[in-house]
Length: 625
Image (cartoon, rainbow, N blue to C red; front, side, top):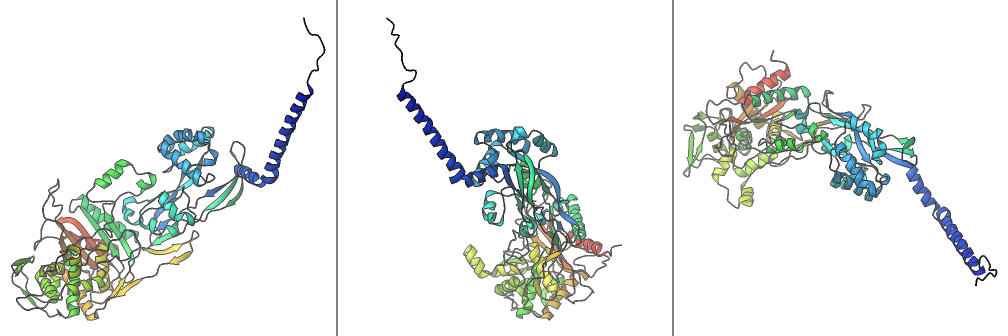
């Protein structure tokens, strides 16, 4: 039987429960609304503004580098970079975006994803640069036109560093590259960002503080799809300052041309050439051959290029003018001679009878390259007699002639700058070796011998110098006794051309020697050329200097061309006085070091550095017509 009695449509207690739920929801929403708009309103308004208004850093243009005459050695060309703002990329889409960008910027997708993730932790509202090298215009246009596929990625214009002469100046200028994590950690307080480019080596590294400039800022309004609507404000970046170097581009090219030609003609395998002004320490030219193309590091050096450079036994990545050390050979006799004169072990009239080409002491044989006969100081220096300098350096126990001794040779060698960096404004300079008995005992736990003194007296044995050290020591003799700190920076100019800094000459020390002794060395150095020891036919300049042939390693082991790769190298260090006299007036000094340029030591062996020096100096001075 069906119950047809009337029932209420909704029971009262159910209606009351439903009403309570509705009221509760409104209370929760009201509380949440109060929290959003009143309690945390300012915070969420700030987040909204950050999403709508973005402050984008604007990188400054790097300063250019010029030679002393205004020739551009490093400039900036327009290019494109790809950056990603982590705040615009959902974590779930991070790997997808990295995979899409990878082939366009020529990086691994894992690298890109990591860069984005790391920047998200540091500051998600600061863009991270994901292109290691400038991207092509076509790639930039693709990213701009298909922006919906690369949400979060932005193409920005950036200046690309260009070195017009590549290897000619790479040992000096170095190169720039993207800042790494370690570099950022030390420079973050200076305003650097992970998308910055900084100097990595050479003058680009040394003078980063002048070249970089200061960041700018751009405030950009965006819509909900993160497209830029307009620029609300702009604080322009401050461009970097320009460097003017002491380098003379014309001399640099003349010197490099002659050295490169010698390598091409297989007269030697590699070479170093440096020229400087002895009166103030300005470096006028510095060439290290072979070198590398620093543009490769800006474009993104390939593994094949790096393998070729690292596999080249001539080490093109090393600036051999300052970073490698070599036995100076007979060029070091200037140090021994000045020491002997200063200590009284020799005078102008000290005579040694070189009646044989070998000197036997305690059963050991010490050789000269020929029999010179009876020679005094000037002719002993000019003819480069080894036995003469053995005698005035270490003495002769059989004739009773006193030598200066190893401690004195080391003392005056250090005074002239050997055994310590010159302080040139380049990173990576070597200090060389200026040995003495204490040094040998500390290094090898062996006592010093007379043979060690003899070898040091002629620039062999443990003595090792950089080409720049050798040149700087002769420059001090040429200028009358002042050792300058060599320098490459002449001045710094602001972007509008005003000089904001001038680098003055820096005196390292004054030589504690008599002027008459310096004059005697200058006289002897000039006689090296006039007697034909440094043969300069039809010379048009009063060039003075000293030759040197140094043995590097053992005289064995031929390369594929039959060349003794550990044989003899040739030096010639020179300067040019204003007149053919001994006055300290020289305004240019030069050193040339040629590798594997001599097969042996002999009376008639030709030192190619001499003829090349004559050619370079006469062409530079315009007297070779």
